[in-house]
Structure formats: structure tokens, C-alpha cells
Image 1 (spheres, rainbow, N blue to C red):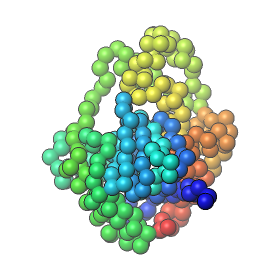
Image 2 (image 1 turned 90 degrees about the vertical axis):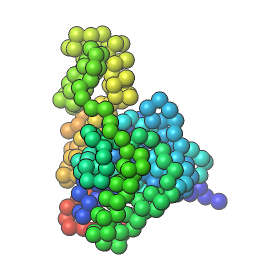
Image 3 (image 1 turned 60 degrees about the vertical axis):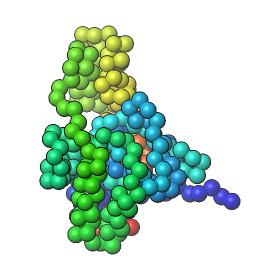
Length: 283
């Protein structure tokens, strides 16, 4: 018997601005440590999604959701030999904040208090959002999306910590991140970066990992892929996007992009151009 084939679609629908959509089945796929600017609401229907989240390893099986807040580092891989199948919503921070303000008593930036929730009804709601997209029913898709997010915030939501980082190490880490963001295509070495900030390489490395859940070089790769996503969504060809964000060439972008986003950059760009050209985003 041949092994199950992997498949994935990562797209947007014009009726759901600020929300990425994903359907995927992965078997041998491994997501490296990365973050999202959006929230992650991933509904598992088959197999087990296993991922590092903060300092623990989490497992989301059938009928459960992986719930990840923006900018929280995590990984992803199959927790069983047959892999996992899931549907995911990636709503923007602005959208979730608006829903929280209308439907909950959460004050401040909303977030999920748990990384995994066993909630078959919510899993069905996520699937219904994508089915409404498939059916070209934007009214239902938008309504179901908002109902899903509101339900999850009421059940698992909390106010997340906000404000500037505390302590000299945290401030140095934030300044280092700003430098890397500004000089993404030609970043300094760790020693050069530490010298610019008036600290040592090892203290900076420890502070950065503590603040952002990954070392600076891993964060830089993640940030490059994030920026590449924006360029590709605007129609930039993958080869041009690769150079613009600091990768050596398109194969370099392809390798890192697929290990973080889950689909190749060319497929990501085609889906977004389809939406911009008036497509429905239907499967």
C-alpha cells in the first residue's frame, strides 16, 4: 500500500479580509520553529498534530484545536505515523480584538489561555467556515467565522501581557530585533550586533531567546518569510521576493518558506493573485 499523499492549500477569500485559510494533510511534514502575525485556530480531524509551544510539547488529536497567539514561537509535526489532517483559520489581531470587544469582557489584547482545546463543536464550526467559502456563500462564511472566534474567546480567552519589555536584557533583545528588521537583507553578525548594542554575544543570545522563543538567526529567517509573504501577496515574483528579503536565491526562499508556511511560495502567490483578480477562493 502506498503512503498517504500530502496536500495543502493556503489561501484567502475576498469576503474574509484579514483571514488566511488552510486545508492540509501532512505525513512527513515538519514545521520549523516560527511565529505568525495572526492568531492560529487549527482544527484537527484526523491523526495528531504535535508541536513545541513555549517550553512544552503539545498534542492535538481529532476533535481538538491548536490555539496559538500572535508572535508565539512554535513548531509542527506528525504525532503519529499516519500524520494529521486539519483545517485552520488565521485571523488578524485587529479582527480578533474587534470580536473580543463585542462579545467578551476581556480588556486589553485578547489571547488564548491554552494551546490545545478538546472541543469537537468548535472543530465543526471551523470546518463549516471553509465549507461556506467553498459554497461561495460569503455571508455564511463571515458569520460562522465570527461565531467561531467569539466561542473560542469566551471559552479559552484571556487578556495577554502587554507593554514594553522589562530589564536591560529584554530591552537589548527588542533593540536587536529592530536592527535585524531594518537590515534584513544585510544583517550584522551576532558579535557585531552585540557590539552595536553595548552587550556581549552570549548575554544577547540568551536575552533574545528568552524574549522571542528562538535565537536571532532563527528569528531572522522567520521574519524574512513573513516579509516574503507580504511581497508575494502583492504580486512580486518569488525570485524577486527572495532577494528583497535577504535569501541568496529562489531555492533558498522555497526551502525556508515551505518549512514555515506549509506551501511553496509560488502556490502562495497564485492563490492571492487569484483573489485579487476577482476569484472566489473556492476549492
